[in-house]
Length: 281
Length: 283
Image 1: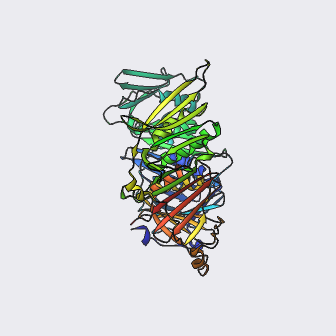
Image 2 (image 1 turned 45 degrees about the horizontal axis):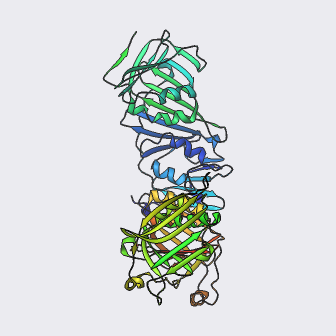
Image 3 (image 1 turned 45 degrees about the vertical axis):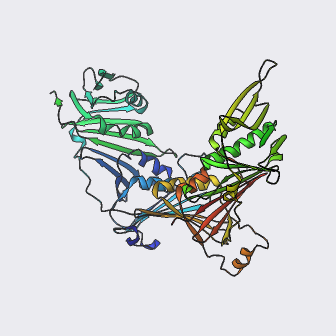
């Protein structure tokens, strides 16, 4: 329904109120999962989870716990809505995109439930901006059914080294192949592009490798185009965990420190490329 | 017709360059009018500009050490010409550490403004960089198209908020909508508003101050009005952003005059340069 027919609400009726002294603590994280136009917000007493999906093969989730917010109140068990993420980000950064030292934008985000727009109050330097963003029917988000009990292989790396490896990946390759094994090559990223195949290996005792728990040799391929957006999350993060389960599904978890040093998480799930997926027992 | 002028002060080069850069960001081509006292950069409100018009006036004495003008006739001792401000801007780029800058009207295949920049060099002979900027001389009979605009019979006059803040907000709003409503009242309050099917955004500025215009006719009619009443104009965002983003001269105050639903008029005064910019309401 057009914005004008979405309802107006008074403050007492808000089902969700979330406030931040620094709106960048929300906008920076959202930018890292902005590879599609729309995002689904799910708020519970734990905080907010924002989900973006692509072609039923890729899902990115950003978790902002309730403790990150200066004020967080929710009147229902769970509140879910869908918004245009590009519009939301333009509103969150209405006073300008670049960070000026010492200057922050304060944010109060309010939602009154189904049929109401998402209302943002933003303030910087005494100037107030009010945004009302139309919300859409929330769509069911995919359940990748990824659980720790099915995890076969897991590594945790410092993001610096993975950033370097990702920036040097041959983008003419349609797939990124990930090999994880208790034996050599331990952890290997491979591409097969116009210049031929390229491999990047991480030994299990490397300084960059914080955790190495590989039980079986697995080689899986993932569409490069699906993984490319994850580099934004990688560039924000300090650590990344890479896990594969018995189906070859990939989970990438990024630990991100915000402007105030608080920790948030971003998680990407990706299905293996159907054409070639081997698991060697 | 003859025109030659010389500038030797570095502060003047820089100031003049900033003014020309501002003009070049506001419009591709404009009319340069030369009189014995002043230079004018003019954009008249033809449909091609989307009705936007501009009038910028500088006193030549504040910039040039030598200034000689022989206009089209003794009775009309002025010269009007079309030029691409960007060309002048580019020529002035080389002037930031110049020893002198000479500007003159020449005829090389076609009428040109020739800019000669004398640069410092190690040898006794200076290096001179010359730019020939083609211009179109405007005949006397068309001069009426470029008359100075009068200050409109405005409904509200208000000082703009800091241009940088306003520019940042309008830049973001441009991603969301093609049009913006600018409204203000006599209580020093201004709002910038956009509304589309997807989103509505309103930015509120307060305590901006309203300039007093003394015994101006418009002022009388506003005395009876409730100072809280907002007067507004709906404009094309890109035109507003072009004005805000182009400012290289940092004015202390910018005045904004609004004729309700018709036109918005900006006046910048900085030292000896005045710039006026008009944006009509979108139909």
